[in-house]
Image (cartoon, rainbow, N blue to C red; front, top):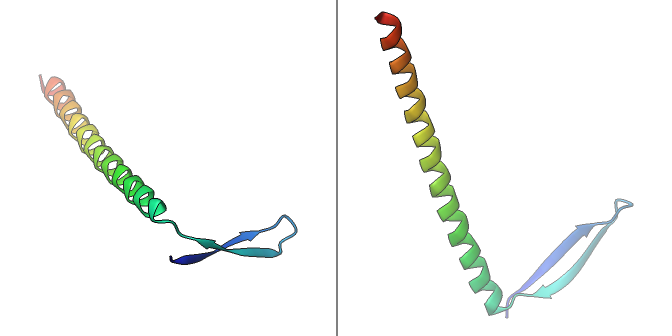
Length: 68
């Protein structure tokens, strides 16, 4: 099983580290979390695009109303 070194900084500034074993279940959990993050990033990008589109429409409408 793969092993990782987990490091932490203590309150007094010293480092502590411990060897931890990476469980296969942790790999699945990591993969699941990465998939969730990817979905959230995609949804966020779509929301940003939608917001930009709505702002452009609002500005276009405002300019049209000013012209009349």
